[in-house]
Image (cartoon, rainbow, N blue to C red; front, side, top):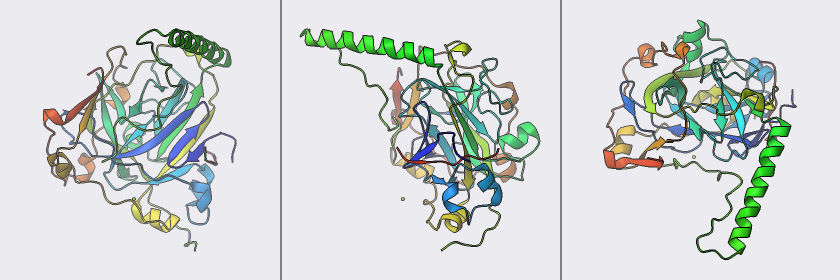
Length: 350
């Protein structure tokens, strides 16, 4: 089924309304303590399910969407750099809202808020735990009960990641664009007047790159190992409260996409491509003096903790102690940020 407007542009998912989402590999955090933002270590490759109809499981063909490979216990964050105009984006993990902890809904809500506001929200690294923190997205197989979906709903049916975008209402967006044109005209007039230090017009959209920079014949169809997202450690990151009235947003979504998570062996079998190399050794990364990040916006209001998500336990409770050594970054490794066109993706039934 088509008609929802999502497209792949390289490894970027583009949804109607100027929404851009990239899936970024990163270092897994320890499951105790609260930590700075881990770095970006390159993009996950993203492929359309429809291009591999002979090798993907039948239920994936039914749901449509895209797929990407993740290792067991690998961590990921979602980058929204490149989003051009205001949009509301719902993020589901196994059809549980990563922001509110509520069941997946086709309507926006502000009580509790069940979406992030773009481009205000530059990225999302995990489920909302409130008080300026999130708990990291970490890949885990279905069937253990370790996913957010399994712990919140008691079942593991969907797995993967679900995205749905909502634009501003047409009249609200038209007024916003009118004000932006007037602001640009004023700045242009000031600059042409020759005043020293006159501001240059702002870019209409953020560059398509993250401020957290990076550090590579049909087989028989069979069931792929289903994967979902559990949680890992906690990090300092706000999930911003929407300062617009709910009535500013369209009641109907403009686009949606189902993101299937694939194990590296299944990725090779389905696509014929080699999966990415295994995740970077986090202790070696830190010993090398490479950067971590801290992002704080003094002008923004953070959402309260999502009560439904508070009891979610880390994947280590199912998989055992973390086998990788941990070395915390030194204070001078933490970099402060801010205040401190492609092929269409087929949608299906889900």
